[in-house]
Length: 107
Image 1 (tube, rainbow, N blue to C red):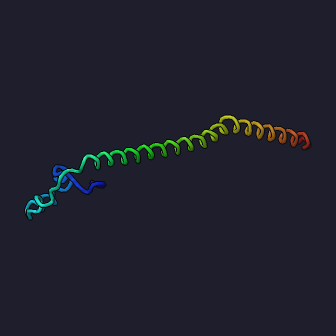
Image 2: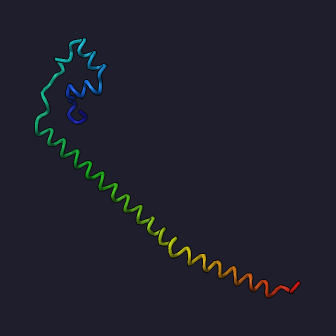
Image 3: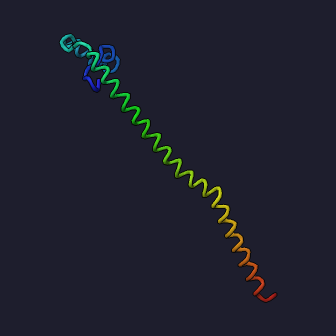
């Protein structure tokens, strides 16, 4: 329908029942009947449609891989880098607390 501008009578009845009934009442249904699209047009429509679908799936796949790569770096940081940084911070605070308690006079 989108590419050829034609719709089968069954599809018209299913998708637009009121328009189909109105065309039957007015008698314009027989006048609007046309031949089905030629074979070359159907094949060209299939080639264009499946090519667009393949390109869309390829683009979505590349986007997902790019996101997973960025998330992968984040997971590596959270898995390896963050515990290392937290250990360094804990060591720093432990030693600074220990030094400050040694420097203060006893109560």
